[in-house]
Amino acid sequence: MLRCFLVLFLLVSSRVHAQRYDIVIRNGRVIDGTGNPWIRADVGIKDGRISTIGPIDAANATRTIDASGLIVAPGFIDVHTHVEGSLNAQPEAPNFTYDGVTTIITGNCGGSSANLQAYFDTLRRQGMSVNVGSLIGHNTVRMKVMKLAFREPTAREQANMEGLVEQAMRDGAVGLSTGLIYTPGTYARTAEVVNLAKVAARYGGIYASHIRNEGQNVKQAVAEAIQISREAGIPVEISHFKVASKPLWGKSTETVELVEAARREGLDVTVDQYPYTASSTSLASIVPTWALADGDSAVLARFRDPAMRAKIRTEMLDGLKKNLRKNYEYAVVAVYKPDSTLNGLSISTINKQMGRKQTAATEADLILDLMERATLNRIQMVYHTMAETDVETILRYPNTMIASDAGVAKLGSGMPHPRAYGTNARVLGRYVRERHVIPLEEAIRRMTSLPAQRFRLTDRGLLRPGYAADLVLFDEKTVSDQATYDQPHAYTTGIPWVLVNGIPVVENGQHTGQRPGQLLLGPGYVQPK
Image 1 (cartoon, rainbow, N blue to C red):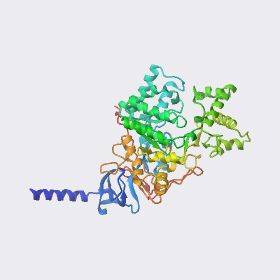
Image 2 (tube, rainbow, N blue to C red):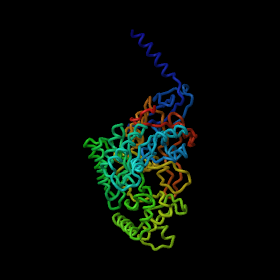
Image 3 (tube, rainbow, N blue to C red):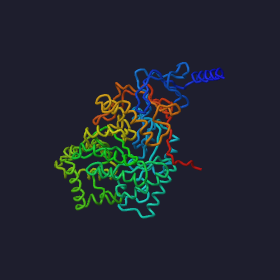
Image 4 (tube, rainbow, N blue to C red):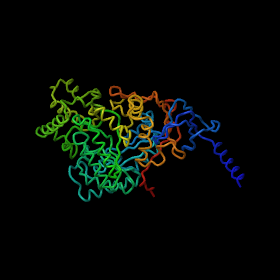
């Protein structure tokens, strides 16, 4: 009997050893995504999946990649992106793939495709170089039912919104997102969001929130997100966690403690972060939200009414004072379609170049003028509002993921935030290698298994046999973000290989044009009949 067992064992072992691999990655140092130390191992890939991790005979490989001197890690998962439209225009998503990203979650900050089934069908037809999952956006849903109404929903309107969220979850949404500083989401009270989050929770989704305030009232806004988790019974992801108010710089220890206290209570709350001291959003975010209600014609009427304009300007100036700022030098134009020569200039600089009086009140008027000229279309800005000490405090928190808050960038277009190109490389280069804020293995965990666990991507985020073969190969000594605020259009360096579902999309530092990405549908997905 023992002899028969040994013969059988040798036969099975020889077959495993002799199996053919599509790709074998050899001679690399493997970081598996758990936070464990790296190991020396080969990685065998077969049919888009990881087949073996360990010593592999290169003779059994159809193709071999020499990873000498490189780290082999799970592909990075970016849980906070905005790729609606931009991914359709550039399905290769080069700013993401060159930065090691293999999976993205879109539909954040309350804004998503209104019809996820149609959106997913479009992506399936055209293909993409990254895997994609999507949230359903509260702002999108509210706009569809209530337009820009500044009021509570009726019972019927609430039911209609809940029906849209339910349909989106059945179409494959991974959860519900809110953007509670943006119209029309800012007009919603907490109870409205709780009831929508309950629908997402029934389908196994999560709640991802751009909270109601990230400045003076950031603590109250964090508390509201936690309250929604408690009342809706849903996991909560607080988006691009930050402290964006000069008087509160250094207080991130307190906002982090709010999250940790919620976890001690038994609430499933986590955060994500981009590793920069500047944010990026619309110029309209400076304007009081009440002034943006009821559609473009109503907004323009307020801007042009002297009494209303004076009230808007007064509230804007009050906001400056509360944040200990004398003017709008901190606000820099990223994309202004009516006049691209303004891209890269601060509001204060533009005001000065126009020969206008150099006062905060005049600059506030300029902001309203710029919005009028753009017929209220979205004007993208970069806001320098944060402190490095808070960035590092939040990065040290073990439940912080890394996320870009970016779309697919068009090379050379506008002056976007550099996070669109270099978020992950910046963590690996600046905060791991140079500043030693967190260890390398921990940084990889934040970019891989932690986001996979958060968004229930059950076969991604780890290097494990049977998992999808999403991998990134990088040089820990040279990986670096090249994008800056002054020169934002620059791809990451030091990441020569990126594989998505076993197919190289970046090979020896060059995009291959391959589109092997897959749609990652939420647990509530129901196959259409």
